[in-house]
Image 1: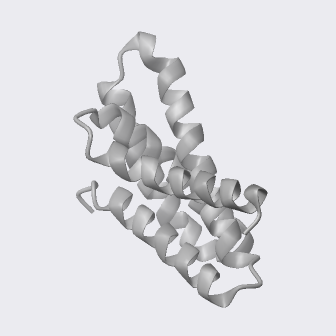
Image 2: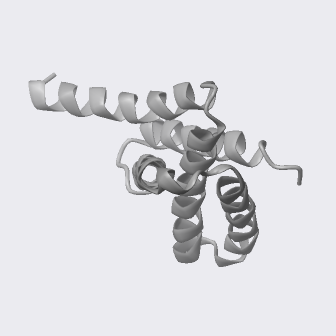
Length: 127
């Protein structure tokens, strides 16, 4: 395996593992902000491929953003934005990998990881 490909795989694993570790931190603001970003990516993906589902995701994202707003201090805007962008990027990478992949096994893995990340975020909500 080439050094470039090995590095790319390491970055992908980090992008997936980091948000999982964040979810278990004692920082609910970071968790909710990351989830808001992840749900933004899912919603945008659904606009392209499954429009009807985007409405549910939009409601869930709004609920998570309400949680962010409720616990965020005024000086935390920059951190919240960064966490949202990191979550959105990580989720977008998984969705792209699941959709536009020549390797069916890898695509299935990315699809499952994306679904798991989405469930971990929506599981924080009270329906």
